[in-house]
Image 1 (cartoon, rainbow, N blue to C red):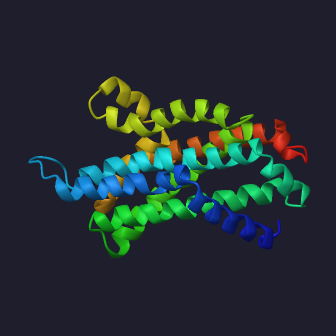
Image 2 (image 1 turned 90 degrees about the horizontal axis):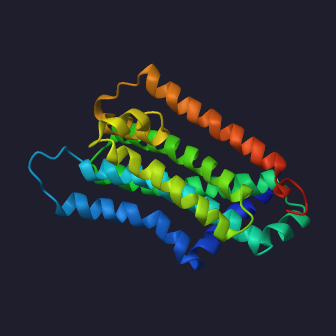
Length: 236
């Protein structure tokens, strides 16, 4: 892979995002909501940083997933991707460039959540690292959807239900034991659990195993879709 080309793709996405308000708002909406709710709400009996944990989990399940799926599917539909690959940019260079951009943009939101929660030093670092694991998983899943979709409309029709499942299951599971039994097998639920105990982190084998299995599933899907898609060829 050519790092110069990857860097060029990275900066191209930054410029495009400043023009594309629909993608830009994905990176800003939940951190802003988290700050507003945490600063303006004081409910007796509510756990510390309740809204930060809630919106941080939703952010992980929504922002990277929808952003990278929208970017890839839009550039496929507009033939921008075809032009890039015909200009000697390899498909994997494009994916790394776009993926690193989305992860990087979402990491800013992770820092905002951590600082708003009042974490500092090692605790802040652990909080950000936990969020980054979730962000990378969502970015990978979003790439699968973007690559496998014919156009942006098809991508959106798949992204929305997937996003709802991974974003809202952790919240709903707090009120429903049956859903909690299912939710615990999702990476967003495990990330939410780890975030809630970040000050006294107790990483269990179950947490690591479920996250690893989710990663393996997404990597397998990515390999399958990438291998079958015309995205893997110059025709895109």
